[in-house]
Image 1 (cartoon, rainbow, N blue to C red):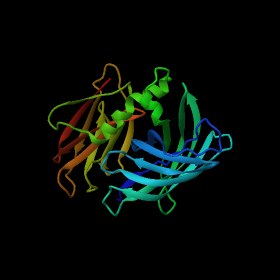
Image 2: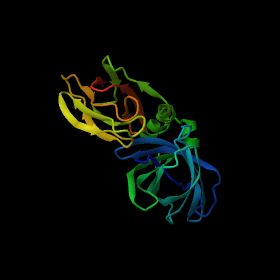
Image 3: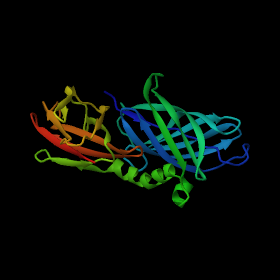
Image 4: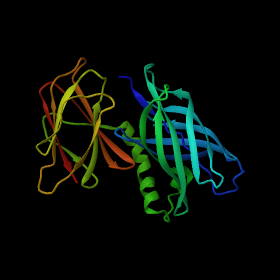
Length: 285
């Protein structure tokens, strides 16, 4: 299965005269890809009348960093943005079989605590025009984040507090023990968690059990993975058990686990285990 890379192509219209040009304006935000996870982005755009041009950097600072062109348009009152990606400028991805998922989005401009915010939905399409992803986009002006104003609304403060952690979490993977119970700290009782192959698609097969109930059996895990919504329940152990059936075609059975700490931050865990091994993960609120 070819690896799918998600790109977000965002735009922004400042609170000045609509016909002005804005050069080298930077924004930073988050894309939430349904059943995949959340990723950080840095965007540079220019607005000229109702036309948008610019570039975006996907997974900034990560070894999959990718830069692309974007274009689109804004509504006459500057409150609605439509745009799409049309060309990869440069990428650190070396795998020639990579399939890029190009984002087509519609975002609404909002002002929260004097901070300009863009949010909305997107549809990702591959080179054949087939849908390869859906999700939501959240974006704030980078200069506003850096100012860290005490007058920010709760929404913007949450984004501001977690953006740097997003970048760090994209590059940091915590190794899980295959012999001891691993504790994973969650934010709240509702937990969104994704299991996927942390190496290559080589037919690694697993079972996943949570609080003695089967979530999935004989799942041949891949790079896309599966996402589950779990609940931390009072009076229960809240224990995930991942049982490995085999070691696939290459090396050990390798599983990555993304735990969504907030809508803007993901913590990644990983284990490598032989066949017929049970890895225990305790969710802690």
